[in-house]
Length: 85
Ligand SMILES: [Zn+2]
Ligand SMILES: [Zn+2]
Figure 1 (cartoon, protein in one colour):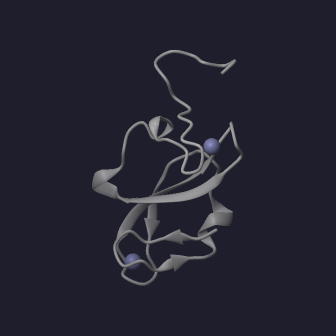
Figure 2: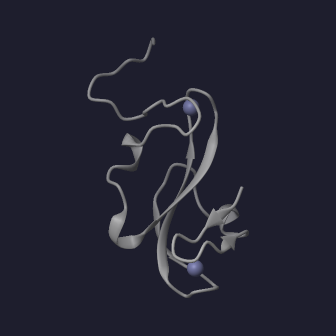
């Protein structure tokens, strides 16, 4: 798992250990290009797929729970609960 800087593509190898899953962290600074960015480790509650997402701080999608899983497409936040899907 790598967190890639959305500005220059530099891989922040250690950052993943420092952040909580499914929480947005918008205070990263790339050690390579020194630009700020936001990151989130998404863990899908449906298929257990983990992915590291990063954005420029001015283009963070809100809310992040509305983003689909990169593997199964599950969206955690839905307007109607579909728990027994
Ligand atoms: Zn960078
Ligand atoms: Zn999934």
